[in-house]
Length: 426
Image (cartoon, rainbow, N blue to C red; front, side, top):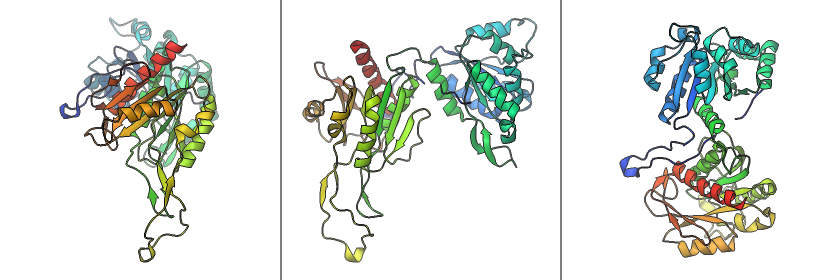
């Protein structure tokens, strides 16, 4: 009963010293979102969703059911959207509001959607403004259920949800989590606003060369065991790879994110494959490549590993004088034989100096289509930062130097270049 349904584009940028602006995906600028809110305790989360959409440039029209107004007020939504809130199916001067709102919407989202709403929508009722809009709109519809877990499991609700999917609506959630006070945990919790926003962004994304493509992204560090409690690793946070995976999924790609250990929250849509070591990264990439059309190798794979990891913890009293190291697998090079003929491959090069000559050598030696050069020593770039400054290097073109930008912006601009290359090759 779950449907998956985000974004891309460039943004206004500011350097970190001036307060870097978040990416404003082009999919949101001027896009009209009809947000329907029904009467459940999770209605308060819809205020955050309305605010986040508005901040990203969307025009948000909010419709409240009668019972929703028992939980949240119109003034709150007006405050975060700057727009009048709608409530009545028939109101003086607004008799055709349901037709106008239905036609203007680029996407309709009902969050939260109660069991009663699911029943009325599945039956094709038009007894309030929201259900009338559903019948009149031709825009994509995303319904986000939220209710008690017993209500969600009831056969009538299951049948209603299945009927809504059959009608072409996307059902997002519910998820397992804490319910109302005293109800414990269970499947019935509203999907978090940030996740809903990502799905709405994917749905509203215009057609582009990445839609429907299979994209594999690697991210984060690898860890190589020294003993059962110690590892060799690096400072990679995984932010760059996670940003690329999220942006590719928002653009409509089918994304597999192969990630080393990080503390980041996984992005909403990509399929997640967790690994620890370089060997595991190599196996995961090799397994994913046959179906892939794009590979973005943003992971910081360890260059070295202990030759012989020990099976017992090394104690201070018996520590060795030295630990012998050997080269870890070079995943990009070692998986060349597994690449499909039309695979577009992006690599990363982290250098402490200018590094362009080394990056170009890596571009050729590892048969890459594009390499992203970034600095390990420059402030605001490389590991453990929210920002990056990169140089995009391809054969036969001038190097493209980007200023210091949020990594989310770098991801969007990189995917713009990948998309253009795919389009040129098609």
